[in-house]
Amino acid sequence: ASTKNGPSRIYLNQGIYAEITLRFIRKSFVPCEYTYPNYKTSEYMNFLISVRQKYKLQLKEFKNIVSSNNSGFDKLLHNFKQKKRRNVLK
Figure 1: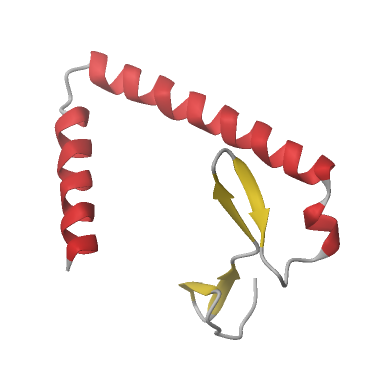
Figure 2: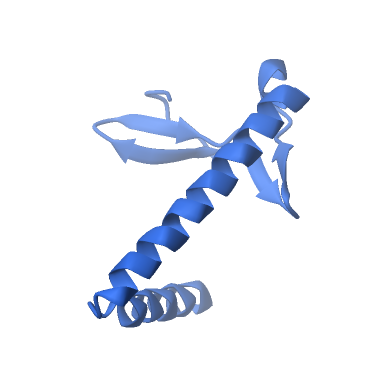
């Protein structure tokens, strides 16, 4: 995180920006040219892939729980995806 804005930074809140240092492309993390060397190691990449896999499983479990309660989660998710597509097409 940083207090400085830049082309590769995303505003979070209260003057704090996150910096994009890795991108997930074709099932793997790809470092940016300015990524620190320790974030480029295979150990770090493997750790991030395992965290991502666990997170995806947790999201799936959450969706199953919410869907089984007939709370309209699928409809909500569908509407969100539609809005996102419309924003991309603008």
